[in-house]
Structures are given as structure tokens and as C-alpha cells.
Image 1 (spheres, rainbow, N blue to C red):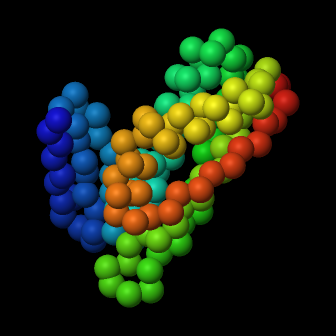
Image 2 (image 1 turned 60 degrees about the vertical axis):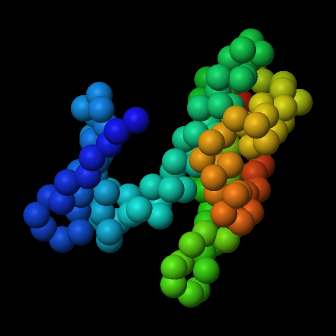
Length: 135
């Protein structure tokens, strides 16, 4: 894997680009894109949500929508690293709650690489989910 980051010449904005050419903006102030710490929280949410969606699809669950909200707690001292992250998943579709719980456990205990790195650094990660009716 190879990525690059280029300062946009004003403020604290940077353009990030991956090997395939996809790009996004990071902003130290969080105005034109996520801040670096927001990006880490989003990386955790997206890593886990991808796992959960793939697992539920393999379980032949009818997932219509998946959202993940993250609440983060950080240290007061510098560096202001995360101490705790809470992920709240909202899923829509014809879903068996036991299978959703199983998919979440599999993601958080086995598959999510971002979560594994954060846990290794001492971050507590908690999660819950809510099933919404299929629209």
C-alpha cells in the first residue's frame, strides 16, 4: 500500500491520494474535510461497517441500509489520543438481531484491523446496534 498527502497551500488543508487515484481532503480545523483524529474514528467505523455488511450478506440477511455513528473520548493531555470510542450501528432491513450481534462480535473481535490497532494502543472500543424497519 502506498499513499500520498499534499498540502493545498492554504490553512491546514491537505489532499490525500491512494494508489488508485482516489482522493479526499483532510483539514486540521475540520472545516473542509475531517481532521486527522476524525479520520481515525471514521476509519474504525468504516472498517467495522464493511466487515458487518459483508458478514450479514454472507448470512443472507436482507440489509437495506447501514450507518455507524462514533462517539469519542480523548485524553486532556497532549498527545490527545483516544481513550474510548463507542460505535452505534443503525441497520435497516429484514434482519435477525442474533445474526447482527454475531456479525458485530466477529468484526470487533477478529476482522477489523483498525480496531485491533486502536485496542493495542489501549483504546476501549464499545458498540451497540439498533434495527430500523425496512423502508
